[in-house]
Amino acid sequence: MSQQVDLSLEEQKILAEKTQRRAALRNEYLKLKSDPFRHATGEGGAVFDSAIQRYSAMKVNGFDYFKPSIKNGLQGLFLLVIPMGGFGYLVYKSRAEQEARFRNGEVAYKDRRFKLI
Image 1 (cartoon, rainbow, N blue to C red):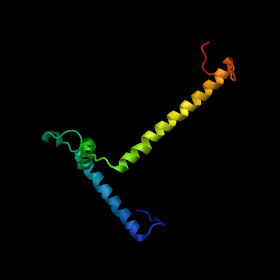
Image 2: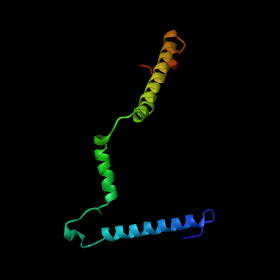
Image 3: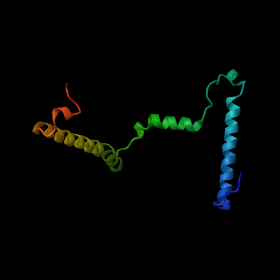
Image 4: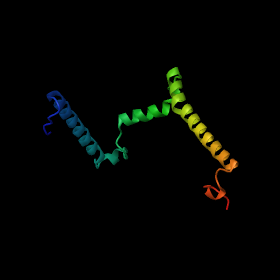
């Protein structure tokens, strides 16, 4: 590993250990993936990864363990309801103003973007 000036000695050791762990996991994965005798045991296909299995199980069973609270209620309000309502209001307001300009004769028919002829 190359020497990095802006990191302390302890951080460099941590990065070196992380790199070694990553290389060891990569080598183990490649060894399992390219094993020519693996099909004989009936385990063909992808390499089993327990972390991916736990993540998939969490995503499938997440609704069963959901507990409503004030926090996630407010999150839903601020992330879904208010933005959708605000956008709907802005669209309604701009369309109403545009329609009022059309009805008052402020915009000539030939200058309108959407016209029949």
